[in-house]
Length: 512
Ligand code: KIV
Ligand code: ZN
Image (tube, rainbow, N blue to C red; front, side, top):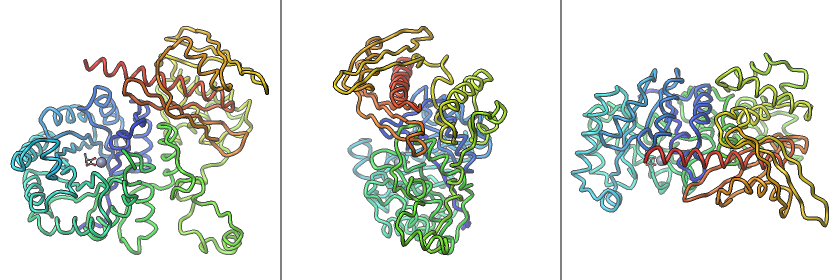
């Protein structure tokens, strides 16, 4: 048994399955680069066979990432596995993760297969995958609710076929810590060749116990890989959160006795990048990355902290990246300093034109805002006006008028495939008027299911970051936009969501 705990991040696969969290290829690539900076051991980049878009995302991440293993999910069939292998061709280290459900409920009702058929398909799939890559992970979906005897047969067989990692999902978040830990322990004791594979835990958070269950799987069960996501992003109540698992194992090394290779000072930047990209806001009291996670407001606590930090602090805020939240650039900063900061933040713009556009936006912002923080820079480069040529719609300018007792009115100029158009409308408020002005041209028919505004760096001087979630014909997308003027930020977020709806529509059309 090794004393290293492998961190397997599935933000870009299981996290992205969360309704409204879908990301573009470029967004995924940017997050993958941040995960590499974090020194995540394995990045699950997507589900290559699920769509052309996902295939391309896995492929570009495989080509770009050198230090982390890049993994693609695949169902247990030859077509999915071949697509995964194809997408992973350029990877320095590639893993195929194949899965099939093993619980009686899933086999009978979802797969309509007998246990023997499932066993045979698991064997064939792992054999097929091992002929394509050396690193193969197998997951029995709904593993925790599966019959122990049957599960032992399946897992023994797939290890014999060469599965190098066995992952035991609590797919529906039903487990409780002690029982899940015991479950993993029993499997490892009963499967005769269990020592030939690394055991992994994958817990969903439906009962709020994903992190606790994963830790029990490690401590009681002896698992040496944890599957997790940044901010606990994921379907329903989400997955096990990377930042919580990592900081628990690091802070309580006395208890767990394990090493994790994560460079924790990049945690906060990763959390913000995922939150800004998906529009899934982090709650203020979220452990490690919430705005209040290290804020000591009560007088008693502050007094204790001033006398000795460890009276109330079990981790140092700077160890997870909080100290990075300082003024980094200003009005007088030059293009080189800006470019360097982008590099330090793990942002790679593809061309000099994109860097120039981002720098121009930075200068514009610095004219309006004295202090520019890392969060501002990240918001600025996630703004689609940096890569306008790739987008259907682009923001140009906005004017609006609102006065007590009068109906607000807005006039907006934006581009449609590079051509400027102007829309005007009134509305219930300035934001409503601006978005209606956009719709006079676009006529998307989309329904807004979420609108939220957040101050990026806390004060009224900071940029407002707006998230807009749109739904159309069963598709849900998030758009984000940032600007010191929240009406402008709202218009940018709305256009960004329309772009995503558009590119999703293209993706579906391309697949026929
Ligand atoms: O939760 C789950 O069962 C999964 C598997 C595909 C690993 O995400
Ligand atoms: Zn899952």
